[in-house]
Image 1 (cartoon, helix red, strand yellow):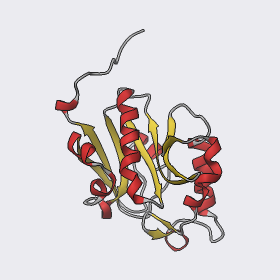
Image 2 (cartoon, helix red, strand yellow):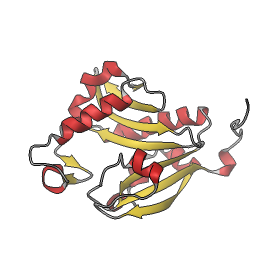
Image 3 (cartoon, helix red, strand yellow):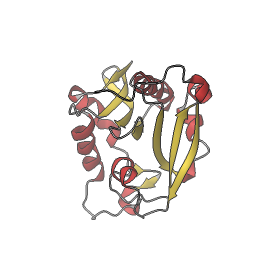
Image 4 (cartoon, helix red, strand yellow):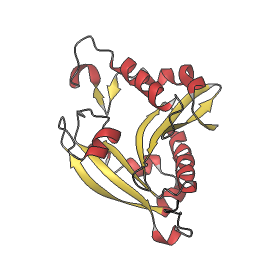
Length: 195
């Protein structure tokens, strides 16, 4: 069952932060961390503080099975423009990801957001859509790759740096992709003005 996650899911999501890998690398060997840094504890605490604390623009939807969150997608709803940012994904049940993404996209479409940005390893550029998008979303949404950020360098565009990269130097070459609802599926334009 897919649900909007909140503070009651803190324990149910914790196991997703037990992997020794981040973006395909062993974080103990490949990241800019002090030897005793607890990367996954830092990541877990940051996720809980941001996505499970009722902040109005940061949300996460997860697949829940027998009280355990098996996977989630987290995102940020922009207040600067009609877009959202896919900020995180964690999973021990890869098959549930397309269903979660369908729910996240449906939520954002209902709120007038037909475009989103995501950041992922350049290594997965060809498989990203195939592994995460349902057939319906693949048909309705198109994309273009906006830019690449080389490994261990700072993204110099402020919003992606703050939101997608979380002000972190990523250890692999990363692509920032813009995914958007095709024009023929934009039957009703959202209201973008008023008092």
